Image (cartoon, rainbow over all chains, first blue to last red):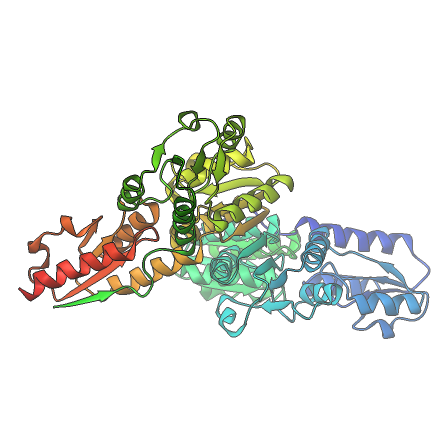
Amino acid sequence: MEVFKADHIGFCFGVKRAVNRANQVLSEILNDDIYMLGEIIHNPQVIGSFKDKGVHIVQEISQVPFHKHLITRAHGILNSEIQLAKQRHIKLIDTTCPYVKKLHQIADLLRKEDYQIILFGDLNHPEIKSLLSYINNVNTKVIQSFDEIKYHSFTDTGKIGLISQTTKDINQYKQVVTKLFENADELRIFNTICRATRLRQESTRKLAQNVDLMIVVGGLNSANTTQLAHLSKQIGVKTYHIETEKEIENEWFEGKQKIGITSGASTPDYITENVIRRIKMIITN
Amino acid sequence: MEVFKADHIGFCFGVKRAVNRANQVLSEILNDDIYMLGEIIHNPQVIGSFKDKGVHIVQEISQVPFHKHLITRAHGILNSEIQLAKQRHIKLIDTTCPYVKKLHQIADLLRKEDYQIILFGDLNHPEIKSLLSYINNVNTKVIQSFDEIKYHSFTDTGKIGLISQTTKDINQYKQVVTKLFENADELRIFNTICRATRLRQESTRKLAQNVDLMIVVGGLNSANTTQLAHLSKQIGVKTYHIETEKEIENEWFEGKQKIGITSGASTPDYITENVIRRIKMIITN
């Protein structure tokens, strides 16, 4: 039995940057409370470690006392949250991923140039909530999956601007492109699925085709990790999505020869290494 | 045996407009020679009738004497031809289709905004020759079919602008869109295949699926008519592309129950009606 790791795995640029920034703040501000708005990244173990370091995790700005430091999400912050934070003189440490910020800029350009904006993403994901709060455009439509297109009516202007959440599946985005093309005189598409997401998807697909068991490591609430598990299942290989090595069961490996390991953009390497160590222990016993 | 006509058939807006304009000129200018630059539309019978009316068909501006009237093609005229015509004080009657002119404007916009322009069209078609002469941009690439994409390298700027000859196949254009999407950060697509072309393609597809013989009527040199014959063959029904009723052979109809008739955007109705009359004579005998 052999264990293979996907070529592209673990923390992406934006996640690394956000976590490093948060740790830097913790090392600099030693004599005051530090707050965090929801989950800086979608990984319960990382969030747990920030809690262990004394960070207060809150869900709303109103829970942060005046003048305190507040670390925001890598997925972006709502416009209304920024306004409220200003009113409370809160010191914001904005860890929004630069690729998410780029998405905001593109949406703003499309709005100004009178495109009907179609946003391929998940309505409940903080990245999409944040984006919608910035562009504040009643004509923007969110499509969560290819199948949803049929429930929407489109522009009379004939101009459609299409953008995607940075962590959606590139092949599904392509399907959406092909379908929307039928409804527009002009279709302006921005490939806003970030390179890290694409590379993780491609290498997961490649690996899943060559093993007989896939273990996907990362937050169950992580969109991009869930996407990797979904891709792997689509290929037809038995797939388990776990957060840590503690969930692993010995019988998963019975009769399996090749084990593939991948992890999401918000999964710390040490967790993936723990998983690999645990698997190697099981299969050598 | 029954004969069915496609829902959308014959002269499109641009062709009607060009032919009417030419006939108007002929009725107004009775005491001077009138010239025509190549084929105003791609139909040998229409061109023949202009010749019969005394119009001189020339291939180059240099063949037109100074100060004469010159009727240009519905597909557009080259920039260099306009310049030469000016030098010779030729009175141009520009019959370029408004949708082709729109294509020029879009190409110009893309060039100004620094897009790598990809043009889906046939290098030897006058519409494409005319368009290329206007945008005069060394970075513009012409792709004649989906298969040709692989021979091209694309932009470093990440911005691709995609336009199509007005008479290409909409489904092939869609394939090109899907493929180019992989190469661009931004893909700005204009659906420049004209409505008349799309309607003729759709109704040809629909009809071809419901008959056991298709007769496509129109110039063998007509891009849009040839496209209709190609679509019909793709569906798997026996298809003949003819210019007039004289080419029809009796045995084509042996054992056939349903005969479909379609014609291109440059085919005069009277030719299609002659074809139908001839077929009805054969099948009722």
